[in-house]
Amino acid sequence: MKLEQILHKEELTKEEIIFLLNLTDNNDQQKLFDRADEIRSIYCGNEVHLRGIIEFSNYCEQNCLYCGLRKSNSKLSRYRMTPEEIIETARVISNQGIYTIVLQSGEDNYYDTDLIAYIIYQIKQNTNAAITLSLGERSFNEYREWKIAGADRYLLKHETANHDLYSVYHKKQKLEDRLSHLSFLKTIGYQIGSGNIIGLPMQSVEDIADDILLCKKLDVDMAAFGPFIPSPDTTYKNKTAGDVDLTLRTMATARIVLKKVHIPATTALATIDDEGRIKGLNAGANIVMPDLTPSPYRKLYQIYPDKKCINDNPLNCKGCLQLQIEAIGRKISSSRGDSLKLVEQMKD
Ligand code: SAH
Image (cartoon, rainbow, N blue to C red; front, side, top):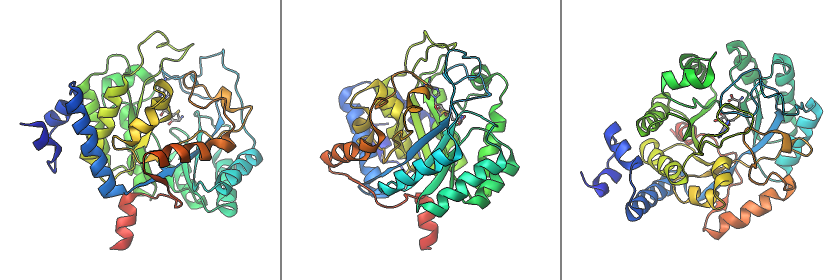
């Protein structure tokens, strides 16, 4: 089948997804990006939503082979922000006109059910922002408590849809568990985000096709595809980074397959390519997730090295992004940017 036909099909088979992911000719690749951009504009419009991330703790009880926060990494200086620091940072972010706060950390049970609930409640009292939690796998009861406290969304990337590779990368953790957590979160009313890492050792293009199809099956509200970046003091420190073009093809193909979802131009993509954010926004993405963790902590959240904008003052971030986004004819949204599926349901 011709490329043009595939790009205009309503439903894509796995073989067709693999075909798109494998495109090598520059013109063909550009056709894929242009079609994704067109579908993005139909379903998401021209607005780009910002999600301000507060990385409030780099302690982690897991040992993911690719991640610099892994428990066995004794070289990393660990920090925990106080609840007051987190709440104050959220207030500053929302005062800048950024209406999603992402609370992210390693898996750190120091912040127990009540402490996280308190932080959520206080942020909701003090801002108009939506709250996304990205705390890794916690108990079902905690998810419930935090929903009641006011959390809106949960970001938990499945990382890879390949069961065997998942067990290799995560040792103690199982893909089935991750997926049951995502389904539960959705059932109790969270907007959910998932996604993968592109270019992890041993991953095939077929695995990436499965990642896209898994996002479809989970009916995610956001799908994040970011390149692997080798991190020092991890098992995979000497492995090759994920490929920029393959990441862009994955995002574009995901836009064509998933349509009404939020897709971020990830910080990892911006880190390995100076133009990564703009390339991503032109290939199907409609979200940017700036790291707004205050100093001195921001330098220490080293999931991978040399993170984009790590030495910048987070207060300058929105202005800087605004210039870049407006330069490509888009604009920063002043809404919370809830699930496109939810917005649709409320209209019905
Ligand atoms: N503890 C939380 C947040 C983890 S960090 C959780 O488990 O969900 C956020 C994301 O960083 C992870 O989901 C993973 O996809 C990504 N990540 C970690 N190490 C990475 C690396 N070396 N390269 C690229 N992305 C990485």
